Length: 134
Image (tube, rainbow, N blue to C red; front, side, top):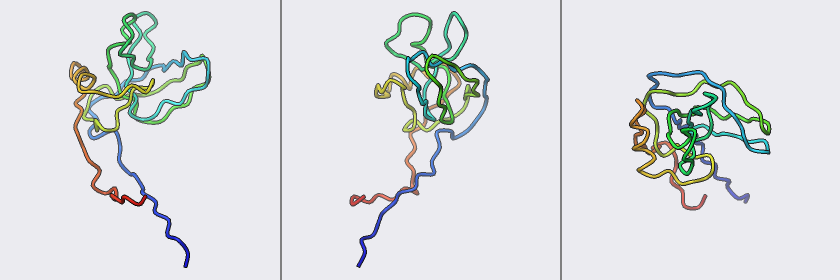
């Protein structure tokens, strides 16, 4: 008899409610191609006005203040940019928010979003099968 293959299909989204969006230019300042996943927290650069990945360790150019949430995956070539539409106001699933550099999203990061009209909500996907064998 053949072995069964278990596949969990995740249909959840980062967006729970959209109250507002804004258009901008997302910059990839890295020397390699980067993929920014849905749920990436973004900040607006103080000098050029473009969007960059939120960096809680950055102390200049306002990149340490999260202002937007990317709602779809975007791949950008090295040291390049791409136009995007981002969530500027609404409710988001806090479990799906990410910081591009891999820093774990903490309560302090979520609280910083409350300075914007972005409300992080703790949501569990009930449709996802909890299977310890997978």
